[in-house]
Image (tube, rainbow, N blue to C red; front, side):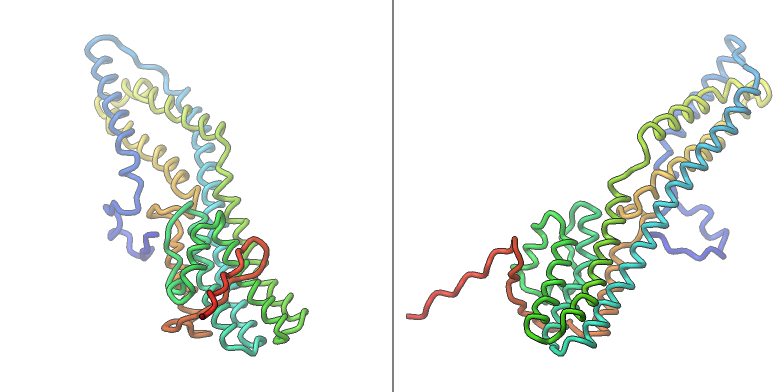
Amino acid sequence: MVHYDPHHWWRYLLKLRGGILKEIVGRLGVFTVWAVAVVWFHFNVFKVDVPATGHTLAGTVLSLLLVFRTNSSYDRFWEGRKLWGGIVNETRNLVRVAALNIPSAELVRRLTAWTAVYPFALTRVLRSGGDNLGPAAAVLPRAEINQILNARNAGIAVAMRISAILVEARRGGLISDIVQMEIDRNVQLLIDYQGGCERIVRTPLPFAYMLHLRRTLFLFILGLPFALVESFDWATVPVVLLIAHTFLGIEEIGVEIEDPFGMEENDLPLEDIAGGIARILDDLVPWTNQVIDSPALSYPGVPAPKEPPPVA
């Protein structure tokens, strides 16, 4: 994500990073060449101008379609940010409540480290790859981290480990059943937020709407020189370029923010958010510079640890 100060107007006017010009420059070039060809043909071969009324009406309808497209994409972007805001809050609540109710520093450190891994694991899920599980992965057993990297859903795998630590605390008589369930509610909320993020990623805008909008946009810009050439003469070329830049840019902005969890410059900074979560959790319960030797988990689906060979 590009961070900027909205009070500075001129500073960003010619800035390319974070803009959509590089994405649409090819299409702008095609429509500019087309406008030049139409104007030249009109004045040198045959008059091809048409009344501008049709384009005026079509432009109004197209503007409404583009507004709907952009609003729908921004709703997805803002919902994604709210879901990650909930993840920030619930990781803090999870560690806060666990630290105050589990009288075992080792278990709390282990739970905190796995909680710090969770947002990085979720990032891996949303981006369909990536090996970065954050700084907490360095203090956890490598075998378990490898299991997370090999899991079909790294976020769920980490959440299972957090819940397993709560089960271990209950079985050891450190917390009651009620306290375990209350703390585990935070884990459940993390899964709910993850489900919301996965819904955004896996449910793009309907294909038919995207296809119809782009076809309409293409035909509108393609016919624009015919409606302008008689009134604007050779000025038709820059006018078409300006209108094409505006309409194509609006459509491309909708495309870029439709999936807020990607790695483009206008997507959400998931690594920064996850890193911020890790730093806050380390302030609550320090886990850095420590080796957390958590045992293999015993819930179904996880292989039991191998017994060491007997000493002769």
